[in-house]
Length: 370
Image (tube, rainbow, N blue to C red):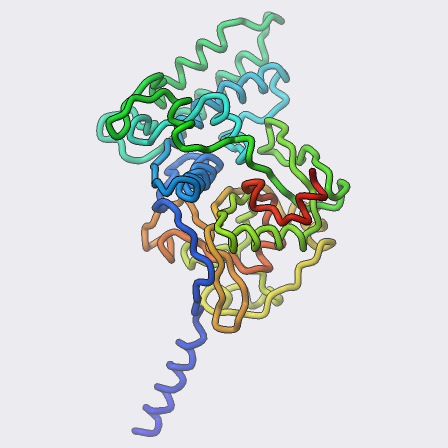
C-alpha cells in the first residue's frame, strides 16, 4: 500500500504544481478595489481609479475620488445627444474613458466622502436599475414628442431626476481642513485632462491618424489614435515599466474571461477552455488580421472598462497583465483581490482601446502622432 500511496501523492503534487504561479514584474500603486454595484458605470469606476493612480504618481497623495459625481455630470450631455438626435443615439449607462476626462475638465473633481451618489439612509451599494429606467423613459418621451415640438423642460426634469437618485451638486466643500470647489480641487490634484490620449488598433482606418471609433459606447464621438497592434502592446508595456498605469476598454464576453478564477486567456484549443481557468495552456497567436476579423464579425465587442496596473510572469515565462476590476472583492466571485490577470494573447485580441498620459508614449510613436 505504501508505494501506491506514494504514487498517488506524486500525482496530486504534480496536478497541484500545474496551477498558475504568478510573479509580479511591475506592480504600480492603485487605490483599493471597490464595486460598481448594480450599475453599468464601469467606465467611470475604472477611469476614476486610473486618475487616482495618476494623482499618486504626480503628488504621492492617495485620494478616493467620486465616481458618481462624474456619472451625474455626464448624463445631461448624453440626454441632450439622444434628444437632439431624435432618439437615434445611445442612452444606456455605458461610456468610455474620455467621457470622464471631458466631465473632469468641465466640472472638476470631488472626493467620494463629499459625493458618494448614495442618497438613501443605510444605502451602501450602488443600484441604478430604477434610475436608468426613469432616464430611458424620459429620453424616449422627449425624443418622440407627439406635438412635433420639443419641450424646453427636459433639462430641468433631467436635473431633478439626477438630484433625486444621485444627490444634489456640491459647489463648495471641505476636505482635510481646506475649502474647495470642484475646480479648485482638480487644481490641487495637478491633473490636466488634456494630458491624456486614447489609442486603438484596427485596419479599417489609416495608422498614425485619429478617428472616431465606431463602437456603441462612443456616444460622445471621442477620437482615438490608430496604431499597429505591436506598437499598441509596446506602448502598454513601456507605460507600465515607466510608472504609468493604463486605462483599458475591453471585451469580457469570452468564456475564458473569469473574474471568479482571476484570469483571462485565449486558449489555442477550444477544448482547453475549462482547463485554462486553473492552469497555463497553449494560447493562440494573435496578429493584426485576426484581431480585425474578430472585431468586424462582432466576436470582439465593447463590453467593459478596467484599469491596468502591472505586469506578471507565470511559471513558464509568459506575460500577463494585472487588471483592476470594479466588481468588488467577494472571494466567492473574485480571485486575486478583485484583479484579473490578462494573458498577452487576451490583451492583443480583446483590448478595444487604452487611455494613457501623453508622457507615457514611446518617443518614436509620439513623433509619428504629433
